[in-house]
Length: 166
Image (tube, rainbow, N blue to C red; front, side, top):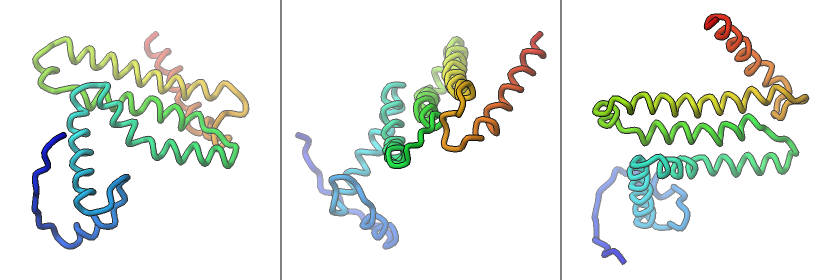
């Protein structure tokens, strides 16, 4: 077990009030909350060391939303594959960006190309998931016209790219 070192700090009253009102799982006192905040920030910083660590950290950040969405969908009987796709692919894309290190990109000529390939791969996966939502009727979204408003214009853009690329 790590040795605990006493630490005394002075904070402005508004920061203390914010800390006191903050809800942190398993932490009740200001000291408990500060320890939890330090641990969380440390995990965040260490999370940028690798794609897997960054992905885990980002998924933790999205988890409260995922639980709220699941609860809403359970109560309402609605389902949004658009939100599900975003919660799946956006953290993967962000983890890739967060874990990429600028010095490695500058020093190694192949790194920028590899990063670009992976960014395009994950972005295309999200785009593909969104485009597939337009195949079924009715679309698996909360709003029946969401696909018409947002995804169909992408189809026209893809057609324009095909024409331009010949």
